Image 1 (cartoon, rainbow, N blue to C red):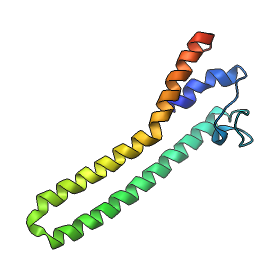
Image 2: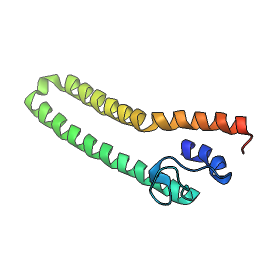
Image 3: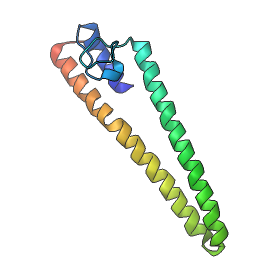
Length: 118
């Protein structure tokens, strides 16, 4: 949302959106979607990510249970590895999906300040 929010002053001053997922026509460098439509698109993306991580967590727990049945003497190690795997994947996925948006938001804020846009 930070990227989308920092883009709004540009759209209000006649700039176009480069990301085709957020344009009216679906082509790059065109009129941006309205704020609410873009916000809803971002929320759909977030729920999709949530679904993927929930499925991954469920699969991980199934594998963990199978390993615990096979190696009951290594319960603490299996549980620890399971937690590390789930946390690592969630962190990696979050970073991968958000890093470019945070970079773009910073660029937007700097450009808006240079151009005097609010």
